[in-house]
Image 1 (tube, rainbow, N blue to C red):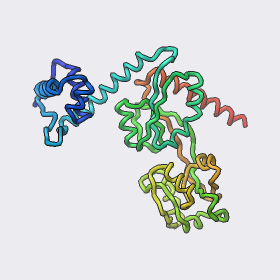
Image 2 (cartoon, rainbow, N blue to C red; image 1 turned 45 degrees about the horizontal axis):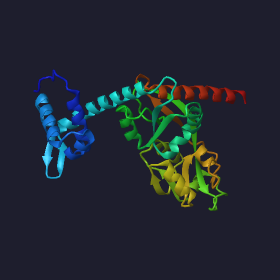
Image 3 (cartoon, rainbow, N blue to C red; image 1 turned 90 degrees about the vertical axis):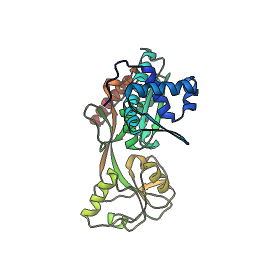
Length: 305
């Protein structure tokens, strides 16, 4: 069993992090401006300190050992946390510079924060907003590593209790079709199941909720496509390949599509912004405040209608 490392050398861990991410001594040498022999020596020193082999040397390059993979998960969090600290120091209190990284599951996901972003950037035009698109799982990984500041996800996503959330919108789903198709006479969900359908994948929350309705009615859907991205469902529906199952507001924003009106109540999903208040930079905190204030105003307007 390795003894604790009493002399923490941050430079060794910085080199380890770079080598682990690039899986190349030559690339790490270019990135760090350190010679390859020096990098190799530093890695050997860290392995000696930890009494653990960190890399396998192969003909194809280097690979991480299981111990290195485990160590990297901690070093990456620490590295990103330090970068977060640097960003916070660089941002002026007047927000004349700064950056916010926001993760969304699809490019359509940005639709739910567009108005908030417009209002924020009007007040703070020098802030850079980085939008990252990935799967729900990958976004949570990046968020946990402090690589991104905020994520926009459906409310079914598991969120650690120490994180904070803001509901951006309650989104009702609907069946939609291209106006080029003769589906304007459909009035029941039974008729819909006889048509070619473009649905979310069976592992998604939205699909599970929909299948529950089908099962209650003893109906069997006829999907010709099952897709994991709302954007893909939207595009294929617009092309007239079938009836798509989509968020209602997304459909209403597309003049080429019509909504099928049926009596059955379809599922409602909450679109949620997730953040960790303990690691927010000044820019991210200000953006959160913008969303909170705008949400209060929107709710007051709805109550007055």
